[in-house]
Image (spheres, rainbow, N blue to C red):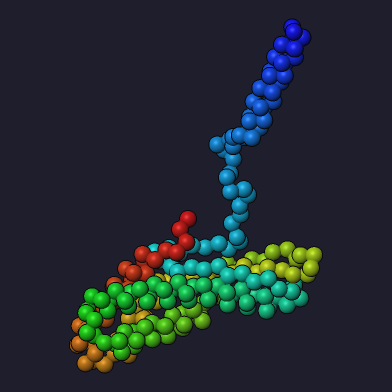
Length: 200
């Protein structure tokens, strides 16, 4: 009888110890200085929007034997990114402006304003050049990555867009919505300053 009790007690102790051990290993605690997201890296030529500039970094991977094409496509990628930011900020500006002057101003005026902005945005974007240009190492497959960053000054863009809008609208249309080029430019500069897609 003593032998059975002793074996039962030994088995119970072993089970208790095993369950404690397994629950301990299942609840591994991460130390506070470990990065919960794993390793992370910043892309070369990373650039952020500021109050003064719209910014974008474009990338392209291609053959190391066609560096010109790779660089051109990285620039086109950056231009598409910055064009989308500027167009988004400007469309928001036009919508706010139209709402503030009243809905009876007509869709034709809003379309003209949007068209004028899109035209100037395209001019700015198509004339950008790299503010940063970097290349990766050539990979085993012969491919290379190009990184290009570009900037567009917000105040300069706002001034040219306001001027283009003023040229596109007739005097009757300007009178109908109470358009003032200087005021429009100031509102746009404020709207552009507030636009920061990528915050550090």
